[in-house]
Length: 130
Image (tube, rainbow, N blue to C red):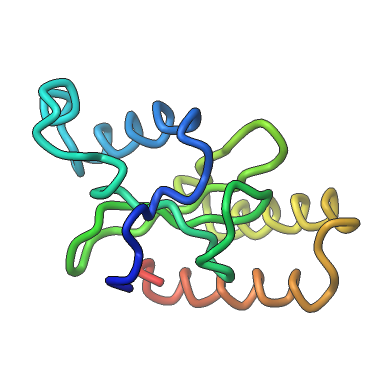
């Protein structure tokens, strides 16, 4: 993990309930840790674009998880005013969802950027920790 990141929650915090609830469901966090404010979730949880870590709250494909050594890495797609967590789907379905997203946003992402997303996705599939 890049220690230069102080606030690793790189998309609008209005999406935090969906992301935090997913991490609770996966056993990464507990509701009591959040409710009792035993940790600052916005410095403990990262949400970072898979090709441009400095990107802030833009459409894209993001990886997220808990900042720690050897933690699980999850994927979501942020498109306009919504996020969709996609890592629970099959390999083929995830690829289809990413292709659909990139086609839908072709005016936003040039061919080089789309290819970078596909390459980063392939790396994620290889070890689920990219």
